[in-house]
Image (cartoon, rainbow, N blue to C red):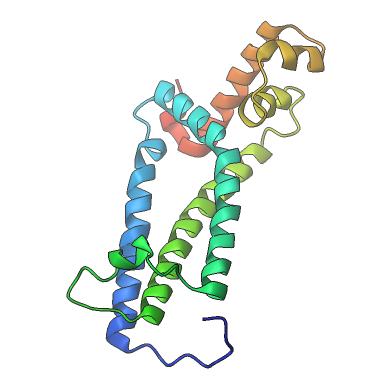
Length: 184
Protein backbone atom coordinates (compact mmCIF):
# COMPACT_ATOMS: atom_id res chain seq x y z
CA UNK A 1 0.00 0.00 0.00
CA UNK A 2 2.80 2.42 0.79
CA UNK A 3 4.60 2.06 -2.56
CA UNK A 4 4.65 4.67 -5.30
CA UNK A 5 3.10 2.38 -7.93
CA UNK A 6 0.50 4.01 -10.11
CA UNK A 7 -2.95 2.77 -9.17
CA UNK A 8 -5.08 1.27 -11.90
CA UNK A 9 -8.13 3.29 -12.89
CA UNK A 10 -11.28 2.39 -11.00
CA UNK A 11 -14.02 1.19 -13.35
CA UNK A 12 -16.91 3.67 -13.74
CA UNK A 13 -19.49 1.33 -12.18
CA UNK A 14 -17.32 0.92 -9.07
CA UNK A 15 -16.62 4.67 -8.96
CA UNK A 16 -20.37 5.39 -9.10
CA UNK A 17 -20.96 2.86 -6.32
CA UNK A 18 -18.33 4.55 -4.14
CA UNK A 19 -19.89 7.96 -4.84
CA UNK A 20 -23.35 6.60 -4.00
CA UNK A 21 -22.14 5.24 -0.65
CA UNK A 22 -20.47 8.57 0.17
CA UNK A 23 -23.67 10.49 -0.67
CA UNK A 24 -25.76 8.14 1.47
CA UNK A 25 -23.36 8.59 4.36
CA UNK A 26 -23.46 12.38 4.05
CA UNK A 27 -27.27 12.27 3.95
CA UNK A 28 -27.37 10.08 7.06
CA UNK A 29 -25.05 12.44 8.95
CA UNK A 30 -27.14 15.40 7.83
CA UNK A 31 -30.30 13.62 8.99
CA UNK A 32 -28.70 13.00 12.38
CA UNK A 33 -28.08 16.75 12.78
CA UNK A 34 -31.66 17.75 11.87
CA UNK A 35 -32.97 17.80 15.45
CA UNK A 36 -30.30 20.39 16.24
CA UNK A 37 -31.00 22.42 13.12
CA UNK A 38 -34.80 22.81 13.17
CA UNK A 39 -36.09 24.03 16.54
CA UNK A 40 -39.83 24.36 17.07
CA UNK A 41 -39.63 27.46 19.28
CA UNK A 42 -37.29 29.91 21.00
CA UNK A 43 -36.81 27.66 24.04
CA UNK A 44 -35.79 24.72 21.84
CA UNK A 45 -33.50 26.97 19.76
CA UNK A 46 -31.79 28.07 22.99
CA UNK A 47 -31.29 24.45 24.12
CA UNK A 48 -30.03 23.42 20.68
CA UNK A 49 -27.58 26.33 20.66
CA UNK A 50 -26.23 25.24 24.04
CA UNK A 51 -25.91 21.63 22.86
CA UNK A 52 -24.01 22.73 19.78
CA UNK A 53 -21.67 24.93 21.86
CA UNK A 54 -20.93 22.09 24.30
CA UNK A 55 -20.16 19.84 21.32
CA UNK A 56 -17.85 22.29 19.53
CA UNK A 57 -14.56 21.50 21.35
CA UNK A 58 -15.14 17.74 21.02
CA UNK A 59 -16.08 18.11 17.37
CA UNK A 60 -12.81 19.94 16.67
CA UNK A 61 -10.82 17.08 18.24
CA UNK A 62 -12.86 14.55 16.23
CA UNK A 63 -12.10 16.41 12.99
CA UNK A 64 -8.39 16.34 13.73
CA UNK A 65 -8.52 12.62 14.54
CA UNK A 66 -10.55 11.79 11.43
CA UNK A 67 -8.11 13.67 9.20
CA UNK A 68 -5.25 11.71 10.75
CA UNK A 69 -7.14 8.46 10.14
CA UNK A 70 -7.51 9.33 6.46
CA UNK A 71 -3.78 10.00 6.21
CA UNK A 72 -3.08 6.66 7.91
CA UNK A 73 -5.43 4.90 5.49
CA UNK A 74 -3.67 6.51 2.54
CA UNK A 75 -0.26 5.59 3.92
CA UNK A 76 -0.85 2.14 5.37
CA UNK A 77 -4.17 0.97 3.91
CA UNK A 78 -6.82 -0.75 5.97
CA UNK A 79 -6.14 -3.28 8.70
CA UNK A 80 -6.33 -6.86 7.47
CA UNK A 81 -9.75 -7.41 9.06
CA UNK A 82 -11.34 -3.97 8.90
CA UNK A 83 -15.07 -3.86 9.72
CA UNK A 84 -15.46 -0.83 7.47
CA UNK A 85 -14.51 -2.92 4.43
CA UNK A 86 -17.38 -5.35 5.00
CA UNK A 87 -19.77 -2.43 4.83
CA UNK A 88 -18.77 -1.94 1.21
CA UNK A 89 -18.93 -5.59 0.19
CA UNK A 90 -22.37 -6.66 1.40
CA UNK A 91 -24.21 -5.57 -1.75
CA UNK A 92 -23.99 -7.42 -5.02
CA UNK A 93 -20.98 -5.33 -6.08
CA UNK A 94 -17.73 -6.76 -4.78
CA UNK A 95 -14.87 -4.33 -4.37
CA UNK A 96 -11.23 -5.21 -4.51
CA UNK A 97 -9.08 -3.90 -1.62
CA UNK A 98 -8.06 -0.72 -3.50
CA UNK A 99 -11.67 0.11 -4.35
CA UNK A 100 -12.81 -0.63 -0.81
CA UNK A 101 -10.06 1.61 0.55
CA UNK A 102 -11.16 4.42 -1.77
CA UNK A 103 -14.78 3.96 -0.62
CA UNK A 104 -13.76 4.05 3.04
CA UNK A 105 -11.76 7.24 2.49
CA UNK A 106 -14.64 8.91 0.60
CA UNK A 107 -17.01 7.88 3.37
CA UNK A 108 -14.75 9.36 6.04
CA UNK A 109 -14.26 12.55 3.96
CA UNK A 110 -18.04 13.02 3.71
CA UNK A 111 -18.29 12.86 7.50
CA UNK A 112 -15.42 15.32 7.85
CA UNK A 113 -17.13 17.76 5.48
CA UNK A 114 -20.32 17.65 7.54
CA UNK A 115 -18.46 18.11 10.83
CA UNK A 116 -16.32 20.91 9.39
CA UNK A 117 -19.46 22.67 8.17
CA UNK A 118 -20.88 22.58 11.72
CA UNK A 119 -17.63 23.97 13.16
CA UNK A 120 -17.56 26.74 10.55
CA UNK A 121 -21.18 27.73 11.24
CA UNK A 122 -20.60 27.91 14.99
CA UNK A 123 -17.33 29.81 14.71
CA UNK A 124 -18.95 32.31 12.36
CA UNK A 125 -21.85 32.77 14.80
CA UNK A 126 -19.44 33.22 17.71
CA UNK A 127 -17.76 36.07 15.85
CA UNK A 128 -20.82 38.26 16.41
CA UNK A 129 -20.45 38.03 20.19
CA UNK A 130 -16.68 37.72 20.63
CA UNK A 131 -16.19 41.44 21.38
CA UNK A 132 -18.88 41.48 24.07
CA UNK A 133 -17.44 42.08 27.54
CA UNK A 134 -19.23 38.95 28.77
CA UNK A 135 -18.04 36.64 25.97
CA UNK A 136 -16.03 34.76 28.59
CA UNK A 137 -19.33 33.69 30.16
CA UNK A 138 -19.93 31.66 26.98
CA UNK A 139 -16.39 30.49 26.26
CA UNK A 140 -15.71 29.68 29.91
CA UNK A 141 -18.88 27.66 30.34
CA UNK A 142 -19.08 25.74 27.06
CA UNK A 143 -15.45 25.42 26.01
CA UNK A 144 -13.61 25.29 29.34
CA UNK A 145 -16.29 23.81 31.62
CA UNK A 146 -16.06 26.61 34.19
CA UNK A 147 -18.87 27.39 36.63
CA UNK A 148 -20.51 30.81 37.00
CA UNK A 149 -18.58 31.67 40.18
CA UNK A 150 -15.19 31.05 38.55
CA UNK A 151 -16.16 33.08 35.49
CA UNK A 152 -17.54 35.84 37.74
CA UNK A 153 -14.20 36.08 39.59
CA UNK A 154 -12.38 36.42 36.29
CA UNK A 155 -14.80 39.11 35.03
CA UNK A 156 -15.01 40.98 38.34
CA UNK A 157 -18.77 40.63 38.73
CA UNK A 158 -21.23 38.31 40.49
CA UNK A 159 -22.42 34.90 39.29
CA UNK A 160 -25.93 36.20 38.54
CA UNK A 161 -24.50 38.78 36.14
CA UNK A 162 -22.53 36.03 34.40
CA UNK A 163 -25.64 33.85 34.08
CA UNK A 164 -27.86 36.71 32.83
CA UNK A 165 -25.35 37.87 30.21
CA UNK A 166 -24.66 34.33 29.03
CA UNK A 167 -28.42 33.90 28.50
CA UNK A 168 -28.45 37.12 26.47
CA UNK A 169 -25.50 36.02 24.34
CA UNK A 170 -26.89 32.52 23.75
CA UNK A 171 -30.18 34.06 22.60
CA UNK A 172 -28.21 36.19 20.11
CA UNK A 173 -26.40 33.11 18.86
CA UNK A 174 -29.68 31.21 18.58
CA UNK A 175 -31.15 33.94 16.38
CA UNK A 176 -28.01 33.86 14.23
CA UNK A 177 -28.21 30.07 13.91
CA UNK A 178 -32.00 29.59 13.61
CA UNK A 179 -33.48 32.93 12.57
CA UNK A 180 -36.98 33.89 13.67
CA UNK A 181 -37.66 30.48 15.25
CA UNK A 182 -35.34 31.59 18.07
CA UNK A 183 -37.20 34.79 18.91
CA UNK A 184 -39.55 34.75 21.94
